[in-house]
Image (cartoon, rainbow, N blue to C red; front, side, top):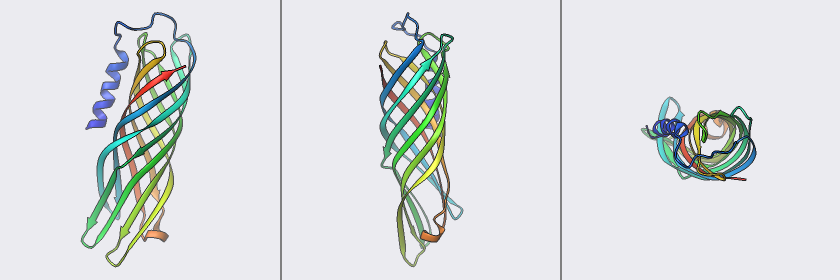
Length: 204
């Protein structure tokens, strides 16, 4: 799976210590901002039928990290991403589809440095996704565009590319639970997503 491969690469990347590693202390606070690109896989379940598909995800992130002298890192971050991914299922005359839209995320990170310029971390927080849903029961089609709350968990690795730059490789899982649209569409949807992303960072 692509997202699992990215997560494994993150661990190797964070432990590595290339020749351009920083010699000075990395302790203290820094604002960070970056561009995100990666793979987005949405899993969609309706009336016992499950479908999944992959496409690209892209966006931006910003936050603040504070590192102690012992190499522990505490961070907060916000993120905006978008995706053109769409997933559909069909059973005879009945069909349903989900098109993923923008995704907002706010959360925290906790990490440690296994080497001078590598960082391993876990993360978690709140996510709000915009999703367009269509449902056809064979007698007519109904559609809706809604925003739904969920949670996100993730893990990754980061490596410094000099004093003011870095790169992250990260896996994250987001779950939006059961989308209660029975009154509107005639059925409920369960949506979750797996993502493997690369983030190019600037640090200030």
